[in-house]
Amino acid sequence: MTRANNFGVAVAGGGDQSKRSENDFYGTPPEPTEAVLQHYIDVIPRVVAELSCGKGHMSRVIAANGFTVLSADKFHRGYGWGGVDFLTLPELPCWRRMGLIMNPPFNLADEFISQAHRLGFPFIAMYLKSTYWNAAKRYALWERYPPKACHPLTWRVDFTGGGNATMDCQWVIWGDMVPVSNEPLRRPK
Image (cartoon, rainbow, N blue to C red; front, top):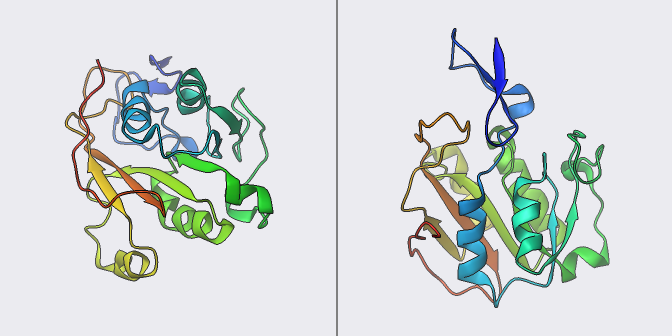
């Protein structure tokens, strides 16, 4: 038996709760996106690409804060352009004028970070697990693309909407205009 949670994600009812969602898709509650926008409102370019938009959870928050949002995803889930694989996008001059704010599939985060830099976005914000950099295999990625800021959240995130907030997350930020910081972000009211 399945049901939809508050974010439109199918959640198993009973049985094995440890199974991953298809294509590693988990809708992002609004608070993490709101927190990073509040912190970087004067640094983020006015046009933002959200190229793993899923059902538009983050894109809607970004747009509600006055940004123009280009929303796309490899899988069409009813929001933005479907069939757009971020990992195969070509380099285009337009990327160098846009911000990029994403919650990449956690199992592809390394590839998404490399691709974001290859495309040349001047502001990159990736929503990642707090333990993301706690892996020896990612040391070369850190050396190649050292973040300007890592912002742990001061609350746990409930991706399933089931009232069991267990995920510790952080925003990892790159960009020339980004000040060096490790300041935790507070939950927006």
